[in-house]
Length: 202
Image (cartoon, rainbow, N blue to C red):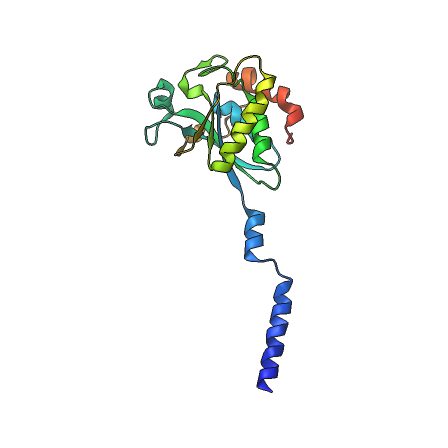
């Protein structure tokens, strides 16, 4: 009798659990990934990627150099080896890494060495810092496909991310906080207008 009751209880428990999402499914559903790009001034790149549907957050920072915890002033000298970059947290179920790469090519000129417009120096170089082998392969393929859009060779570096250093707080969300600042009005606003068809968020 006890055995029969025990089997009945186990059966009820299993049936009830069958309708619940597993921890694995829940974790996959809620999982976000990171992408790290450099394409000139991070104020500009940040403003572009923040407008994409599926992007959770964008953080301005420094990467690709040798100095630990660099300051903006140090990076601007060019001696740290760091580039101004953005780190994008995104939901891969809403936007793919490949789509981020497409926007990356559109958001800057990847054919100018260590320069974007009036911003010149190694800190403004075009660079994709991959987080894993899958991102590396995607970046290399995307670069090859993007070449036809440009009259000159793409000089974008594709390198592994070793460390990302968050930039000073006043750099974060710079365009949102300072829309009327000269750089924002002259450089960022026109760029956003040009890219509007590719950006999902208003």
